Image (cartoon, rainbow, N blue to C red; front, side, top):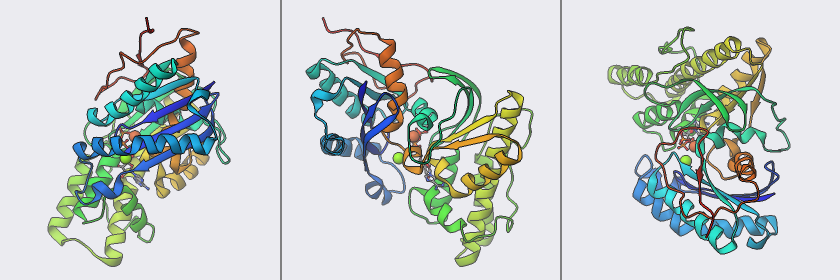
Length: 348
Ligand code: ATP
Ligand code: MG
Ligand code: FE
């Protein structure tokens, strides 16, 4: 099936064309990072306005890249949540209008389910995992551990009790006067730093539960800055490397504990923080040492993009059988449980 997927949950406007739930024919992304950078984070009102400005251009770019027309599209999948409601609505309304005009099925999808299954897409360097696998979502708003038994079949094992890993990167970067998105800045600075220079806490360093907590680590960095001021040069790199190491240690310890506890031999890292170079290197080492196979999508499929919705879009559209669903009823949901889709009723 040739499916068009649309993502606009935060500050990336993206449209992809995916064949058979795995072949990426196009994945156009317009990022609003430069727009939000001057405010130090995403401004929801600006995000929705810029989605409206960009969506048609991005859609046309995807069709041009794939050499296709709207008439070739056999189904549509769109992020329905979680995310910023004003941003989500732009993608949803675009999908609904297209589904109605083309008389094609349309399904509202969960953004996190997209992150978790992006690794099932075909790619030059990606070898696809088989089910079941342990999926760690590390993104701007989430740090969740799931057993993935199949598409649509997930069990939550643990999650953050306060800040998400990406949020901790972004907040600490802000304290250090680094530009949004902070994870990218810290990754770059940390590359020349000593991860053992400062001894930051490893929150929830216990194998007894699989939950995370990152607000205490953020406070420890704030207290260090209060006492010593904002470092520069090598000291700044050392601080970034030490902070990053604390996050990486906790993420990998919990993920590998979960693999062991649930007899899983495959680990999938997903979400924007999965771009982190230290996390990728350390994950490869630690997984190798524990005989766990590691799968991480290329960075462009880890940050927000529409292609990551391809596998679940195909899955849920096929579940609908031959019935056509047209998107009148897809609602934007700021919170949306995993495994749930927003289905639209058939046109009467
Ligand atoms: P969610 O998916 O939870 O709704 P989101 O969509 O805003 O949140 P993503 O786009 O998946 O999040 O990821 C963005 C996050 O990834 C930001 O917090 C950003 O700082 C972080 N990030 C991106 N690149 C890196 C990197 N190299 N190192 C660490 N963090 C990174
Ligand atoms: Mg983003
Ligand atoms: Fe995301």
